[in-house]
Image 1 (cartoon, rainbow, N blue to C red):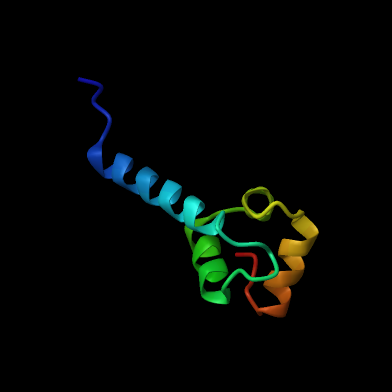
Image 2: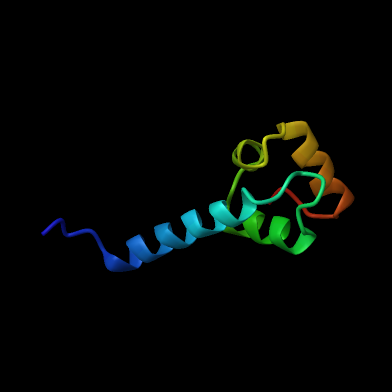
Length: 71
């Protein structure tokens, strides 16, 4: 056995699921509630920009327009 905690694996699987959902969008049409949720989960602007084929500045602007804080 690997002794990897199943709780940890389920959390990791959830993050991958959310990543795949985000990849279906572009920065211009990402729902605000999904952006907020990804930030709550701890995704960085850099990660989101890669998922959305965008750049960090565009994600930051989107966050600011949507009134989503960085922390």
